[in-house]
Length: 448
Image (cartoon, rainbow, N blue to C red):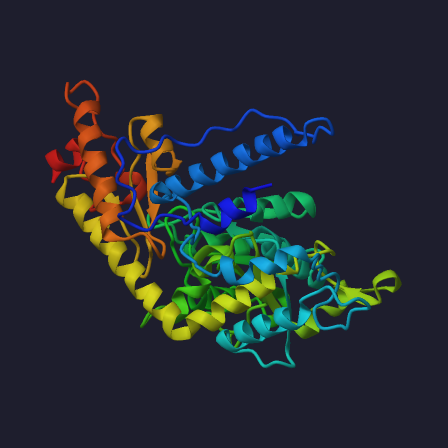
């Protein structure tokens, strides 16, 4: 069928190329079923398949310009080079560091990627173990599983702003969990953490440290948490620290004066998402831990001629190659430049929002701009925003230019005039969510 030719010439529009009014509507779930080829009319059946896929591709291409609410880097150009790999089934089953009995895997690429991250996070090659996961959630599940194996009676401590996968892990593993309050910027409340550690001093602590929270991009102070553990009487063998660095694991190391993730500190594991800041067409992640911790999880599986300490067993063999290629093409210099530009563009957006009289906040070293929730579900859907309570946010990823944020702000201002023109409806007060200094609602203006 002709779909292959259509795909070859189809190019995702770059910034500024989408100029046909009106803007494309949000994608709706397509209502169709499996279309089996009809032996009597193969041509018609093939054309229907081609039509469905072409329509789907066109919709995705048009909607990239309005993808600003979720942390996914869709600005990569290596799909053409790596597309021929799609003809092979690549399965990195089992341990990345063992030889396979079949040739259709990419463990050599996987180990190269893991070595790169081990060097970034300062742990020697012979002291770490890790694997490429199916995403940040699997990395969190694996990190907390190691913590539980080392401390079977341990309690998980996680701030209420932690990713939902942390609470999923506690439920799956039937572990006790203490939910810690947060400061207004989204960081863990250190006083609350201290009080709860003291209350449960008879049990080991398994602590989830957020290197960038989901909604506000807040970074927990690892050094302060280590000090609290010491002052509460927890020796190194009575706690385990997992760092959830899903988005910020590839930003923080490249921003000057930012807090650094390093295994030179007594942490147990770090996980990031590969499809977020770096960018990858399929969800994936990287999980790194200390090699000595993995023994209790490793099981020898004769069927695959390998030991296995992973969560999923069979793993996508394409993801390591895409990650390897991206790291080779970008390098540390490219990632540093991306981090710098995203950080600057986030500050630009926050400043523009404040000048327009809209409540907004931006944490230090963050690329997540939090602002008042738009008063229209259609607007939220159009710009694909993520919302919590009265807050929404824009995640300023690579590829989201100032032209994009200007277009968003212009649209927001026009719609906002309609929402609040009568005066009976007022913008929400966000003082409790983002701090009174960042809230520009009428109540805060009146009192300040």
